[in-house]
Image 1 (cartoon, rainbow, N blue to C red):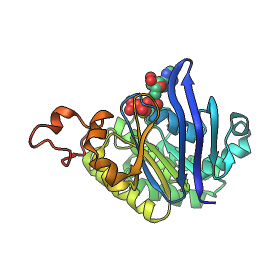
Image 2 (cartoon, helix red, strand yellow):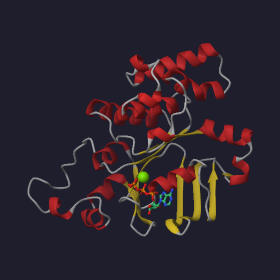
Image 3 (cartoon, protein in one colour):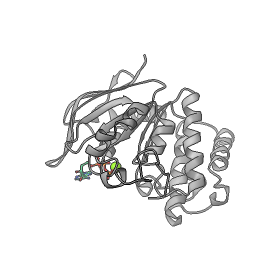
Length: 264
Ligand SMILES: Nc1ncnc2c1ncn2[C@@H]1O[C@H](COP(=O)(O)OP(=O)(O)OP(=O)(O)O)[C@@H](O)[C@H]1O
Ligand SMILES: [Mg+2]
């Protein structure tokens, strides 16, 4: 089974506000895919649907061949199995963190999976060290800074070591060194065979980490689904879908080749 994620003609509205229209998308095991598109185009909605938090109004979503429905996700056993295979870092880290301290937050996934405390501790320590947040171990997630929260949210997904990793705007609020680390870490995950789906406004990140780019337009449909390198060269498309600002593009020294990773 090579199809990890398969959406067929999926639409979704929030009480009358359309967010996704007729989305058909297939992502195979081991692919690294960037999800792009202007504010409000539907990226987060799509990622929530893929992570079994929202469900299609029409159309179907299959994960590893299995249809994902609200009813199935209400079954704790099914939901647990599903969440072991797919990890999601939300755009807003506040919605993700709920434990009393950082250690427990990162240990939550491994404990849920039934790992013993020794194995859990090993995983937590590895993840604390990967993100250089050992010093936060005993802190309350609620009291952390925005970037620290995001690091903890990333660590709490990595500790599960799922087959599919989904990140919604992961660079948001991270300092430059952590951004750099994160992009190279994604590449290592890709080399290790993980399936990656990452939404971002950062074109440099897309260029570095994604093989394929899926681009949403303002009508909440897929405007392009192409090899990332090829899509990034289509300046007209980037301008039309509001990924590159026309003014900067047409002024010398601000060409589309010069993407900068910067804190937003
Ligand atoms: N909880 C909600 N209730 C009502 N409307 C919502 C809700 N969440 C999102 N929407 C609307 O659905 C549409 C898609 O939103 P979504 O968050 O998926 O966009 P996005 O592409 O992730 O944008 P951004 O780049 O700003 O993160 C927008 O029009 C948004 O206003
Ligand atoms: Mg979003």
